[in-house]
Length: 361
Image (cartoon, rainbow, N blue to C red; front, side):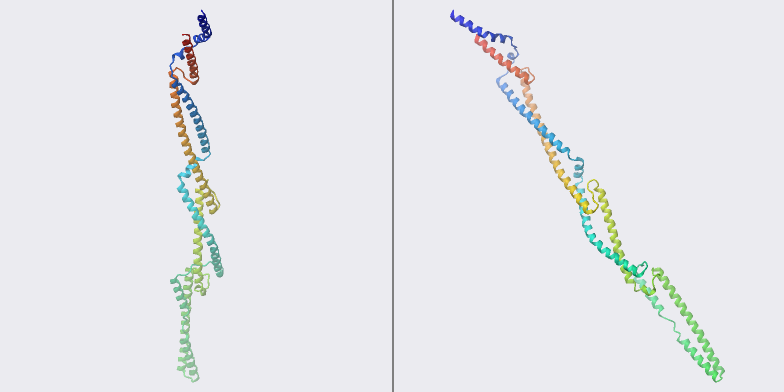
């Protein structure tokens, strides 16, 4: 009787557990899952959480890199990279212009001396100076001046007039009519001859004067005395040489100015400067800035590509882990972590009930 009472007392103590087991649900007891799979889910959950943390960090890093990259002017950087060789040529041209400017700055002082010398020569003669004579024109002028130095010889008619006068005087004194007549004829003939020669001399002088006037008009010498035409040729050659130097310097200055203006237009929006040195300095600074920004932007771009690939790899790995975990969830009929946790609780309770049943048996 005593053993039977002890058995009843034990059943009384286990009855509440048995009743709770009877009220419990049965899916957990019906679904089969091994302890290894439960351990696998635990490992997958830890790995999933770590991957999710790495994904968040990668996204934060990617957003940071994207924000840094957005601060760069991509259009300007792209233009710089695409036309880098052209910009280097422009810089070389600027440096050449700057070197030329330093040289021509010294030459300007020489040209100022040349300008003063030319003005002094022009002021010396008081008129606009003509071009110097060619060698052929100089020879022609020398011949004209030599022709003027050859006067007509009047000695013979004067001598004849003297002889005729003597004969006429002797004839009158000796009352020789024939002798007197011959003397008077000689004097008259000498006079006619003299006036004829003087007429030739005046005609020759007029022709010579006309030839000189024509020569002066042809060569721009009419405003100057004939006596200066040959001596002034050395000064005229010097003035012509100075004019060529000044004109050449003016052409070089205009060409440099045009090249500088063209460079200003080509570099508008990138560098500015009122002079070659200032423009070259500002453009060099712009090139240096663009080169540094291009290196920084390229590095950011590479980092962004790397992080983006890392994020893609992490997401792919995370999906694999989640798919593996969900496959185990689906095998027991649950769809999320909370449901699986509830399933484990029911599984544990089922095992407890089994243990209780075994104890009653």
